[in-house]
Image (tube, rainbow, N blue to C red; front, side):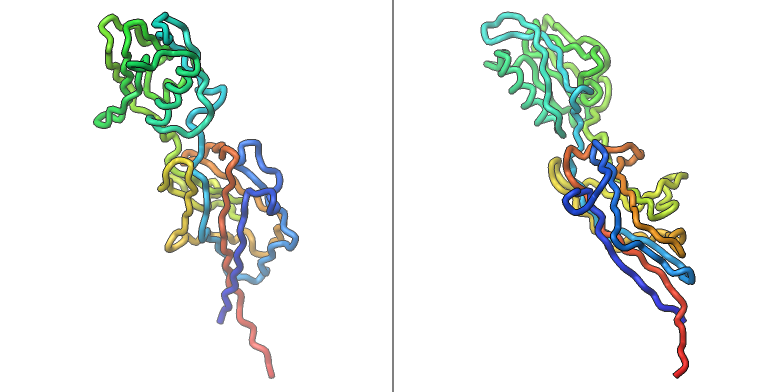
Length: 277
């Protein structure tokens, strides 16, 4: 006969609850336990499962110093041709939000927004591409600079405009890439291998699918959590746990200052010992 034992714990990246060694991007942290995890030497098996996880869907697709600049030529409110350099605040944007932010920034620099904007970003849903509508014949956008959101919008490293026949609709040559993160992977060093990802083990303990709007918290509570082999814990004593968050390709993600957490359950079996009375 055997007895099954189990215990649960919540691991959080919140330093207020004891997380240490949090990485600058917020994706990695350590937990130092006051009482070590000890699985008996005679345990027959040991497994770990993630019963729930919370992750904020706030990973920026416009990043300061990476793709936050827009270099353009357009009209000011006096209909004089000007060079504009727009700096887009870091954040997670969809096409509508990005178009609105660009028009706000242009207005702040006295750019023309009436009766039409200098240009507009429009979704071409059939092709999943972006159309830039150039509303005036002098308008240009320079995507040859590496710190522009050209890849996000699907445009090539080139200069677009001016177009003498404006208004002119220009379709991006590539599909837009607003969702560079398709899902999150949570890794933990309590397991040696974790869940197999294609042909690799990278200590993955949970996959968190994105099912909320940008800026919202994902609450992942699987109906039947995957049991992950953790035989490496048998006979061992662990006081330090390392957790890290990546995208679906294993790249560390910038949590944009938001916290994430997971609730894990560790289960193991031990022989039932009969005692003589």
